[in-house]
Amino acid sequence: MKTGPLPTLADNKLVRMVEISRVLNSTTNLDQLLNTIINEAADLINTEAASILLLDPKTRQLHFKASSNDIPAQMADMPVSLDDSIAGAIFTENRLLHIPDVTKDGRWNQNVDEAIEFKTKSILGVPMHNVDQEPVGVLEAINKQGGVFTKQDAAMLTVLADIAGVAVEKARLFEQLEVANAELNELDQIKTNFISIASHELRTPLAVILGYVSFLREEADPAMAGQFDSVLDAAVHLRGLIQDMLNLQYVDAGQKAEQSIVDLTELVTNMNLDKDETMEAKSQQITISLPNSPLKAKVDANMLEVVISNLMSNAVKFTPREGAIEVTLEVNGREAWLTIADSGVGIPQDQVDRIFKRFYQVESALVRQHEGMGLGLSIAKDLVELNNGRIWAENRSAQGSQFIVAFNIVD
Ligand code: ADP
Image (tube, rainbow, N blue to C red):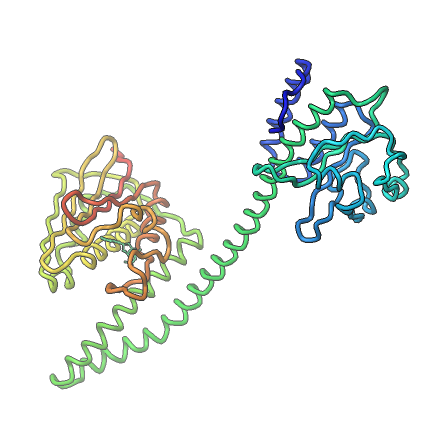
C-alpha cells in the first residue's frame, strides 16, 4: 500500500470499492477485468474517460490494454515510450501525477488523441503495482467532468490501481497456468497414444512367440524343456506388462463398469490368493481373514479382480523372502474394507498418495531392483473409482505397508 493516510472515502464509495475488489478478485479473464477497472474508475471519479496501459516486459514499452473509448485498433498498436510520455513518467517515477492541462506539459503527445479523435484536457494517473510493489502498468483518469481532480479522486484511483495491479498479475498467472496445463494435457495425450500403439503392436508378435514356444516345449526332449520354460516364463511376464498397458487404455477410453451385486467374500475366496507361484517361491506366509457371512457390494467383479491381483502382486514383489502377507475383508461402518497388508519395504510417508499416479515408482528407474512399469496402482485406483469406491495406502507401524479398498455395502 502507499504511504501517508488516505482521505476518508464517502461511505457509498467505500462500499462500491469493496464490491469492485470482490469482482476483480473473482475474475480471471484479463480483458474483462481491465474493462471493469476502467469503467469503474471513470464512473467513481467522474471523468470523461479512463485508460490502462500495461508494460510489455520484452520491449519495455507501455501498451493501451483497455480504455473507456473502446480502444480502437490503432490505439492498441501504438506503443507508448517510457522516456517521453506522461504515462511513462508515472511508471518510471512510480508515483501519482496530476496534469491539470496537458497542453502545458512537454511530455504530452497528441498522436493518440489524433488517432481516435478525442481531446484530452487533464489527466490524473497512478502506477499499478504487483504484489511485490513493482510497477506493472498505469491507470489514467482523463478529463474530470465539472471541476478539477480532488484529493479524494487521487486516493480512490490509487486504491483502485493497487487492487487492479494485483488482479492483473493474478489473471496473467492464471493464463500462464492454463497454457502450461494445456501443454501437459497434450503431452499426456501423446503418452497415452504411445501406450496404445505400443501395446497393440507388441501383442501380436508376443502371441506368436507364446504359441510357438508352447508347441516346441511340448515337442522338446527333457534336456531342452527347462530352457523353453525360461523363454515361456519371460513371455508370460511380458504378456502381464502388456495387459497393464491395455487395461490403462480401457480406462482412458471411458470403459464403463458392469456392476452387479457381488458377494465380496465369495469373490476373494474364489481368487485362491494363497496359490501364487512367486509367493511360494519366496516362502512367504499368507493369512486370509474373511467374514463368516456374505458381504455384498455393487461392483464390476472383473474390475475388482484386476484391482486385487495388482495389489497382491505388489505385496509379493515388495516383501522379502519369508515375509508375511495378510488379506482381511471386514465390515467398517456401512462399508466393506478389503485390506492387503505386507511386511515388506514400506512406502516413504510423503509418497503414500503419489504412488497412485501413472508411472510413479518410489525407486528411481535407474537403480530399480523390482520389475514393473508403475501402472498397477494407477489402474487399481481408476477401476476402484469407476465403481464408486476408495483406495489408499498406509504404512504399518511395525513394518511394511497396507492398501485398503472400501466399497459401500448393499443389503
Ligand atoms: P509397479 O509395481 O509396476 O512399480 P505400481 O503402480 O503397482 O507399479 O506401484 C507403484 C509404486 O508404488 C511401486 O513402484 C512401489 O514403489 C510402490 N509400491 C506399490 N505397492 C507397494 C507395496 N506393497 N510395498 C511397498 N511399495 C509399494
